[in-house]
Image 1 (cartoon, rainbow, N blue to C red):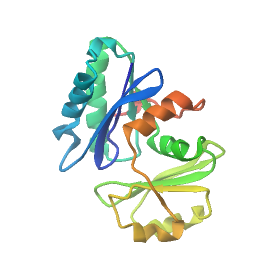
Image 2 (image 1 turned 90 degrees about the horizontal axis):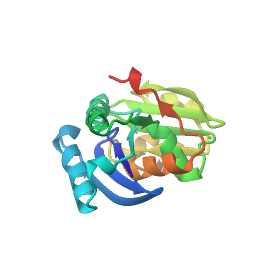
Image 3 (image 1 turned 120 degrees about the vertical axis):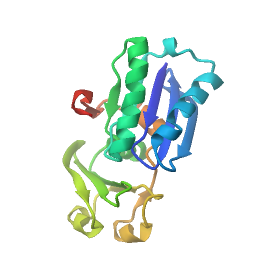
Length: 197
């Protein structure tokens, strides 16, 4: 049984996977902080499926890029569960998971999401590898990456018109996308949790 959480965007989401299939999912829009509802979402998913914490075998979280506060809250939640069940939590690149969900591979793609501070977080992939990443306040600075096969934008966090020249695909990072990436990709881009907060 796998517990998967995603807290890198303006939504908290939780998914439960059994044998590589999502059996439960819950999400909520964050009003102020992921801490307000993440634990309730986890509790609801586990209780609705009558799953005991002790039956969790894998703990996975979205490692961003995204909201630093959201990532810290997600990591703290998973570390708590990891201590109880004596497992090491995994963090996967949220942008790689989103690219994989559209193509079945990462390939050559540009993904853009935003943070609450109005920064555009971006990751550029070339041949399934990260070739550039960072953030900017001006999406026009990303024009060097124009023409990539895939561009994903988190639609709730900025005016999609600002990115219209990129022909964005509107997709939110969520725990189902992350869990599917973890279960189906042969090339997961894992994030080293020892370097996170």
